[in-house]
Image 1: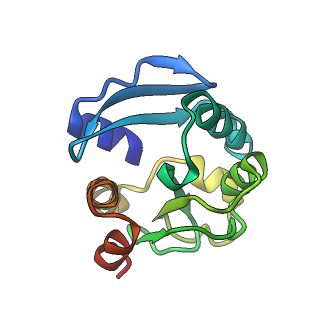
Image 2 (image 1 turned 60 degrees about the vertical axis):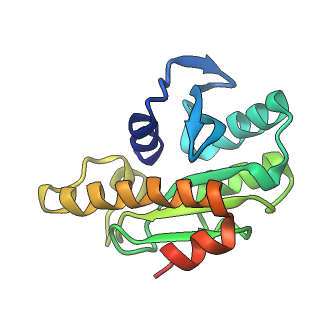
Length: 162
């Protein structure tokens, strides 16, 4: 949802299919970017990310992965320059396929599923009272990506890890 919000904001059409992902090329924060949304199962998203990195010849220092996070409160953002998966199966898949933890990641909090199965929880629509919070978080996530592109990880972390 955050990638789609960023694409809409900058008029990037996500219509191509490559590397098992929907993708589009455009400009964000004055920089040429490729936006990818893997179409694999989340716990296999590493294949799509690794294929895109290989195809584009992308250095990992120029990769930003955006994911949901059930350990963050709904709407909270957390940007990191590198690190472990934190138990997120999609991030673990990416780490395994890239054989590296050396890529930036932006996590968007979706709240704790409580007793509900985590997979069912993250795939379900947000409850109506959560929609305004999520919409605001998606706008802030797009802001964070723009700042990351323009001024780097440290500046974006200082601005958005509150």
